[in-house]
Amino acid sequence: GGTGKTPCVIWLARDLKARGYRVGVVSRGYGGKAAVWPQRVESGSDPAVVGDEPVLIARATGCRVVVGPDRVAAAKSLLEHAEMDVLLCDDGLQHYALGRNMEIAVVDGCRALGNGLCLPAGPLRERADRLRTVDVVVVNGGTWSYADAIRIAAVPDRVYPLVGSEEKVLDDFHGQRVHAVAGIGNPQRF
Image (cartoon, rainbow, N blue to C red; front, side):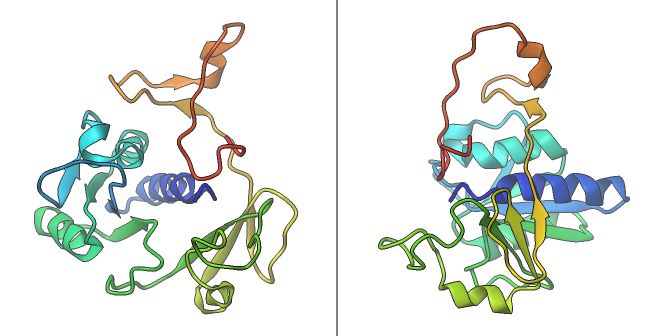
């Protein structure tokens, strides 16, 4: 958690969309309390119902987003209602029932693989050797290295409110006192 998966999905979705692809995104909807799944997420959706990260993705990309604990059902729902060229899954690497053409693993370059153990004894969701089977390893920040990894540094440039739709850039807050709250897996990165 907190490695930068969602910012990577947002970047990929924006880039693919700018290249003319029809992009859809599926996600778990973690924290969402919907009575029925899957759920379509709009930029004005209630984060309490569908989860905050999917709302952020919808607002930041303008892409069709569908969430649900069953990623396969979410993907099928999305594809039943819209034609897509590319379907991205935010946080779906360990969901093997979901078909895929490419796997991307994002690793925090500061924390790396931690103690090398899986949850709850360590930070990993899968064993470290899983990195050998993915198509791309993305290392976000820090100094940890991995053979043939793509290095990135996520730099925030926009702010999206959980309520309302007014998008702002960070410069809008220059000279103001702000209070920020992080609910991500690695709040120190925030």
